[in-house]
Image (cartoon, rainbow, N blue to C red):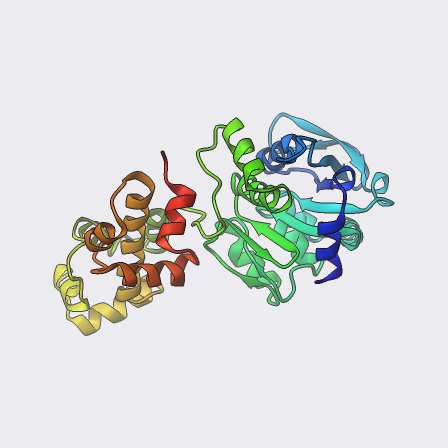
Length: 334
């Protein structure tokens, strides 16, 4: 057990201090979403408040957000002598100049030294990257900033898809509302799943999502990749025929190309082979069934073209790191 992990487990409720680091031009929801979760989290056994929260900036005072609302903050020095249970660096347009601000970066480094857990919301990962806190770790940020995170900090193992990632005592989350998902997952780890579910219910959130869920619509992702729309018609046809046997030859016929030329052109445009793309679309279809229907896993596997339950299970584990049954438990809307 690492010292930070031990600190997380032994910290008393009265010392569970969550510190949010902000700076000019943060995204307001990146702050208030997770702040709402931690502020209202209750220990499921004692019903005591689970956390104490503080919002800090380098100098303190009012900090401008990307809305008409400014946030009153403490200064970093106000919490510098306290043990921090969870440090959260918030995201926003100001993260880009922020990662080049040596005063802000040094302040985050110093706070991280005192923190048992370090987190970022959205582009806050850029500041963690600048502070060297993500080196050698898996991390995610808003999909629009993943390229920048990877280019600016090549020692970070950037992943595009997850809504949040936990790598040891470091957590990173994707854009905007993913910070709420991360905060709920942290609450579940600290206080128990029942506590997280009660908060999600009070916030009118339908479910507590795991980090394996995609941070953006796969359909949108395909459209962004295929900006010219070269294979848009093919993708619609695949979705309508997802239960069929979809070989490279079958797909190539749909676009009037030879199988060899099609496979090469598709991979060059979409960044993945036709077979991988079809599997991803089968998984998307299965997710819809698992979330919204009582169909059995066998029925869903057949309806989505996996042929059998075991093949669907292997595809889910390979892609989402959860089994179909676990996915249903987490995400089915009742």
